[in-house]
Structure formats: C-alpha cells, structure tokens
Image 1 (cartoon, rainbow, N blue to C red):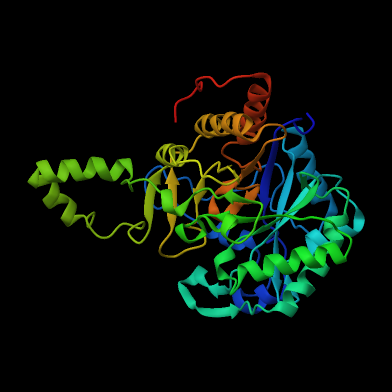
Image 2 (tube, rainbow, N blue to C red):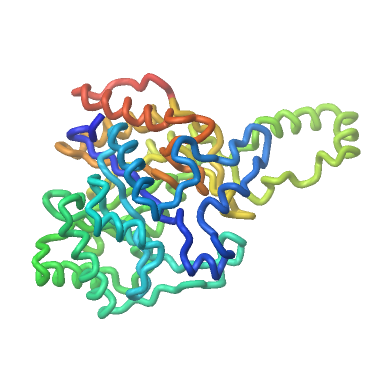
Length: 391
C-alpha cells in the first residue's frame, strides 16, 4: 500500500540507534538506544517490558538496508513520511549520520521533515538531570548558521511541505531566549537563500508550549502525545488494586503479607502509572485552539527503560485502542483541516519510551496494520461516525 492520498500521517523518528563518540564517553563504549531497551524489566504484574524488536531486529541505522526496510514498512502501511529528530548545538550536530546519509544518497525515496530537538542533554537517564552534558547556547549568529545548514534539506524534493513551504518543527520553543527574533531571522535568511517561505511549528507537550505559535509568528503548532498537561488520573496496577482490597478487609492476610515482605515498596513506587485508554479520552477532550494545530497520537508510552525513577507508564495499550483513538483524530483532522490534513504519530521507533509502530515480538505488525486500516476507513468515509472500538 502506498502512502494514503489526502491524509498525511507523519511519524516522529529517533536516530539514536547507532554508536557515537558522545554516547561512548557518557554512557560507555557502544551505547545505543538498544542498551536501555534490553535492560528493561516489568515493574508490576501485566507490565509489558521489555519491548523487543520483531522483524527488523536490533538494527544499526548506519546501514542503508535498515533505513530502506523501515521506509518500505512505513509506506506499505500508509504512512506519509518521517519527522527526524535533528540535534543542533551551536553548529555541532549529534546523531546526524543516518539523516546525512539519507540526504546524500537520495535514498530511501520516502518523504521527511525535521524537528529540532533543542533541549540541553543531561544525565536524565540516571536521575542526574542537573548535570548538563551538552548545552544549547543561542545567538543571532547561530540562528543564521542553522538555517543555512537546513537549506540543503529544505531543497530536497522529498522534503515535506505544507502550503508549498518546507515544514520545520522546534521541540521546545520556550527555551529560545527570543523566539520571535529567531523566527524572523530564519524567515529573512530563507528568502535570501532562495528558499521562499517556511512553514514553522512548535511542538506542544507542556503548558509552557501552549499558545506560542501565534504569539511568535509561527504558522502552526504540533500536538505531542502524551500531552503532559492533559494526563489522566494515575492508576494502580490491577494486581495491586486487588491486593489492597484484600489487605484492607482481611487482617490475617495483611499479617501474612507483612511476613512475606509483600508490603515493601514495589518496583514502580518511584514511577506513575496511567491507563492508556484514559490518556486517549483526556487528549480527545482537549479544546481546539483558535490557531492551527496538527494533532498527534501515540501507540503506547512507557519510558521506564530510560528512567530509574520518575517514569511515566501508560498501561493497557492494544492495537485496537490505538486504532480507535487514531481513527477519531483522523476524522477530526479531515473535518477541520480540509484537503491534505496532517496527523503526527509518536513514534516510529522510540523503543526506550515504549512508543513504536515498528514491529515488536509481542504484537508483530499489529500497530502498523491498525494504522493502515484507520487511514483507509477515514479516507473512505465522508462524514464522521462512531468508532468501532471505544477508548
């Protein structure tokens, strides 16, 4: 199946799956995202961890064959393109080899855009968030250098455009000291470079991201899923709910549990567990902003492989629940955006955040197949209707 005409589903793409000198120095020789993935373990009964890759295996993104296989899978299941995370630190680029080779080789022949992941790099993975490994230092001169580097990507015929303009995302716009100045600089320099107009967006995942697009002259915003400001009420895992009821009602069982040390802090004690279905409900209930915003869904979310403490876990995702959420978002996008609506999916391959369309050993291609199905159903349906599966 080729990319679905009309609707453009774009999946965020993480280029972390190959060794780089920075990760070797900070985390140990040969570190990649797979290092975190394979160390994961279930924290409660029914917790799906580790997420292990299916047919693509533990790939290395330096291989063109891997990148070609990814694009073919995405195309076959109706995705329009990838949004590659782009790491720029004052002219220093990190994790750039996969995209550089895509750009230089002209392969795979699959649409793409870029999202500037402009956060400082810290020791977040081992809980030391205040220790900065690689910092952002913004300046007018760097804004010019940055857009000049981006110009080559924007000129590529595969680059995704909106209203004829190359689409570029900034992950955390509020970190910029003067966002309006940066946006104006980029637009002015793009004209000088012969690029024409740009289509610039910020990513909305927190309260601090809200409303920045119209305030600073961007063309639109991109919703992020999960939206940290719209998280539902946390839940306890079902097995611990059951245990809690028994302990409350039967003192003898409580005494026995104490003797077996079942009341010691559980493995998930420093993390928060949410119901995936409740996340979908919460995000669908968000009010539509007055400005243009592209919606986003996630097939699942669980960043416990990356975080020893403070993980956020969305429990209970299934391909059917994901498809119901996606289908409703697609219908709304088609109604609100008109021709060629755009929907983002988080993500293609965020394995250490439990968020991936790529096949895994548990579900195989099921999430990809449900993506294709949802796209097909909405394309064939002129008016909104009820979802087949409730979320």
